[in-house]
Amino acid sequence: VQLQASGGGSVQAGESLRLSCETSGQFSSRFAMGWFRQAPGKEREFVAAIKWSYGTTRYANAVKGRFEIARHDGKDLLTLQMNSLKPEDTAIYYCAFKSNSYYSDDIVRSTEYDYWGQGTLVTVSS
Image (tube, rainbow, N blue to C red; front, side, top):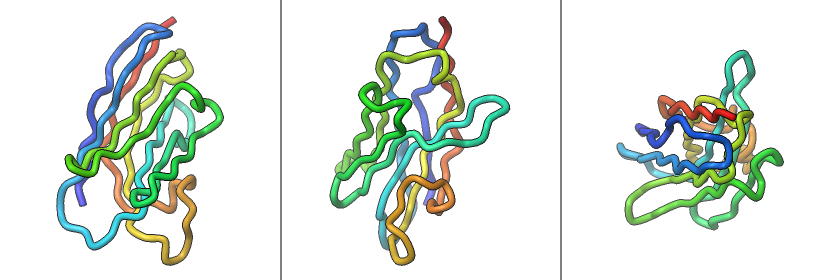
């Protein structure tokens, strides 16, 4: 499985960005996909995730109401619509792929994910 994230950039506070993550390669199952971010000097943190078959979503409190995660089956595409961006949203954003839920159906912890994209940088200035 290969993940290609794109859509990052530099914006002003209050503006919007839409991140995309394309999945390629062969796989037998996909339980969930998620977005994580890592700001300079900080640990990687959960942003949002979606259970692929059910469409169930989870969001970090810091982004709830401003970000929206979506799956696009026909294009095998994961997106993250980010509105009302704040300087504290500045980070490298990574998309991730969780193959199955054999051992856990958790979609928040980064250790649950099997594959990761290369990251795309989002910079929000005040």
